[in-house]
Length: 132
Image 1 (cartoon, helix red, strand yellow):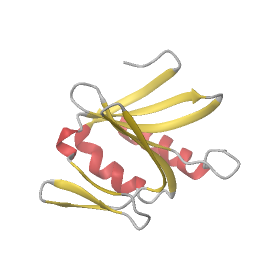
Image 2 (cartoon, helix red, strand yellow):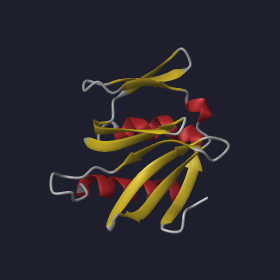
Image 3 (cartoon, rainbow, N blue to C red):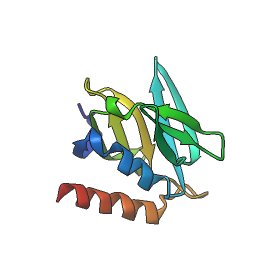
């Protein structure tokens, strides 16, 4: 459920996760938030490219961000568009069947804290594509 200051503009099925992650791997610097067991882990940098093997989408990053995603656990992905600390933010939120957030990937910002326009454009293009 969306919080009062949050607008989930749309949701798409979890079976679109791999194609979204493959696209995001080409965006440049993003911020990935991973929620687990009451902890919040944050990674800023290029979301790594992945490949499927042994039932997982395996991330192999050059910057140290690696992992193994069980994409079958992703029930749906929400396009989040909201204000955060007085600034606009955009994120793709990967949720499980209980609507719990597994992880989020935020549109990146430059050194002045401004959203990267090419990523905002791509985020909105993806919204339009999946809405159609």
